[in-house]
Image 1: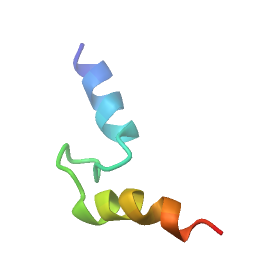
Image 2: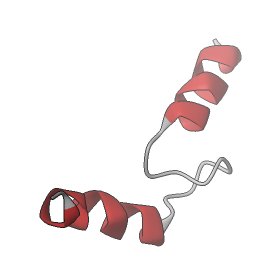
Image 3: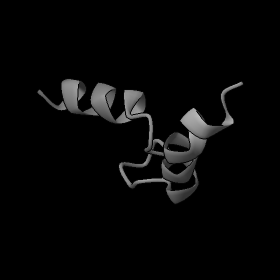
Length: 37
């Protein structure tokens, strides 16, 4: 249902909560493995 969609958007690691992809979070996810010590 619509609530499942809202939950999926909220839990989306690269979304800013509006349903759009947050490019800064995408970059962070991409470079995260390289920043891990």
